[in-house]
Length: 280
Image (spheres, helix red, strand yellow):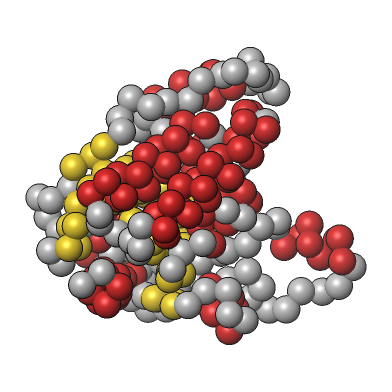
């Protein structure tokens, strides 16, 4: 046994090791640094050592962006149906029940109105924990209503994406949401109201192929995976090795697909400045 292990064994007796609660210490997947969970939370779940951005829940995302006490959730009660009575290894309706029970959420997006540094916005934030943030008919409806709310109130719209794409269990009905949300954004543009698209890890599939890439300004969170098909599928299709960092936010910035790559700690201030410029 090494000196370090012998010393650690003396400092932390075996009985006490069992009493350490799960989740107190977290190992960074990027730099392998061991992080104290409370310190990580204070740093908005960004590794202080390497800057790795952990995924946030919709609730955490709203808390980091919206002024305290100004958030009002809208369009609750809009939930997925099972029009195709779809079944794979499980029934679709059972998957929905399971996701609802596990996450305590209604759907894969939370929508509402709030203020960012005093400026009112109509905002939708994806819940990746709910079936991978997939977009079905209910999600498309909530996004559309969020956009229409922005038009009605004449306030900017912000959509924060974290999604695996269209929800396969609803077939073509989920794909129709791509056109539906894009058409709503066209009306927003005609009303000359700004739309900011915030791309977080991951933003893929039918979400990236529709409203997520239609922002007046595309803001990507540092290190976020952004693309349509998976890198392995693309590589197999074209028969070529893909460049390093392909489908990461920084790569997309270099190639003109996004406008800004932003660290999470600076995201709120960056959005607030853009709102002041675009919607004075």
